[in-house]
Length: 419
Image (cartoon, rainbow, N blue to C red; front, top):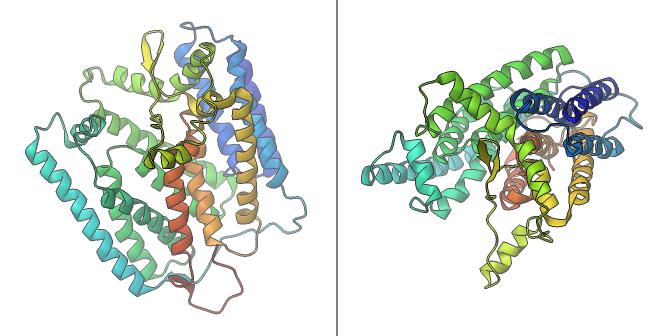
């Protein structure tokens, strides 16, 4: 069976990466571990229901291999004599005036967001809970977030990630207090946005920022990953109960199983079924969607929505197809493999800069930590070019907040702290 063979090959790559890179928080190890889990989920949930012996199921192993190949071109230890060990400590802190002013501004925008939600709920009948009501209203265009609130979310979350990094490396009172304050604001933003993406971005970014600062051994890392997976899975399950209240929840185990299959086993199967349809190529309307959107604002043709059409798989349907579909739809399967090669090179470059450099560059550090979010989502959907506008905003805010005008050291040091 191709799925089992691919699972074994992914497990083999996992062990090879563990032996060569010697770091289980490295991007290729994380991605390999994810595909081992996903292949296992596909077998558990779909074996005996659909044909898992299709050679196309080997695509995900091939994509993983190409990503690791790209990573190894840049992210290896070639030319590095001494590997940095031990915890990364700094004397970083933000300007207190900047933090105070920005916190007041952030509280104003968060309060406006809360008030808008309150007014909407006051004027409309709540169905089950406010989160589900807002989500449905947004999908129908009845609830629209003002642009000034939507664009204020990114700088608050990015500053929270930076503050977390600063606190992890320099746990003084000021860093701790403001990290907690901005973390609360970011969580509120994440809840009000009515999807789990913002919360997961925050959790994953802070987790890997912390891990690269502390530089734990693999045994300690494994324990942390297990605990984090339990937390994320718990958030996923609890939010599913809140989000899908219109579904039958009387059989709790069946409800949880349904959503575990939907999110962890359906996307790889959906891509294979979609690929067999042999639909016409889009010739770049996905990859260059950001630029097409700019042309649209000047009177150009309407840009396609990033929400994909549903496809039926046995007794269920889904509209998420892994990272492969977004790029394969443009120029073919070879193009998605090229994208994975480029991504591997990008992650390899950042990993080498963060993991092996004696100097601490907080821009590179936080950018790598944030990029673990779309890496984890490879099995589900694309969150790179499909969300390019958000990434541009995030990177600009990350670069701006890491400038010397806002972030500095309390002592004269030789280390480089700015991107």
